[in-house]
Image (tube, rainbow, N blue to C red; front, side, top):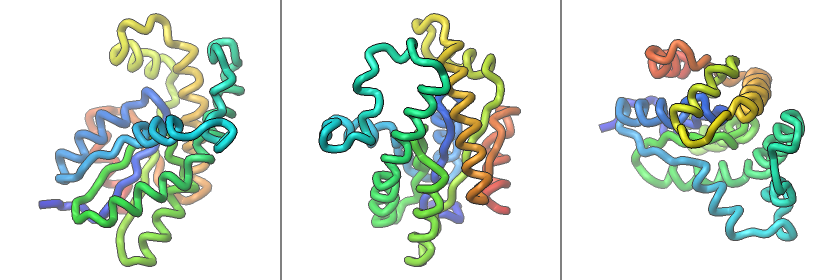
Length: 199
């Protein structure tokens, strides 16, 4: 049995901040199903081409992203996320046909898409909520990557991109009056997410 006050929870945040880990915890606590939006992203990119949907293929012509400066990588991430907003709505609509709550988590969930999903579901008498995780410390994200992908070598530059993108997401969430929750302290994160959603 579910004890949630929502049918779908959208959990957004940059790569490496701990979304998947806390999503699993929230799912255990609430009896919810987990949807990893990254899987949807991979699927739609696989079945489209840059000619068919250029917004989904911003990185196709980038042979080595490490040669781009961090700001440019973030610009491409934002453009990709914006192009994926209809897919977010599609996922939410599908989950609302199933009487099991879901946590949808991913890097490419935008606050703008979340607001659209919230409004659309409310008009249908259903509850979609959204929260965005934020991590400001590049060293912490670097350590998270090292723990998750120990074979990856130095990932400080990737972490810098992640923190910059995290700032953008947090700023957009605040503009849309959506809750932003700092990732640390980690041991209270799921509790603080629930508190943010109850406000």
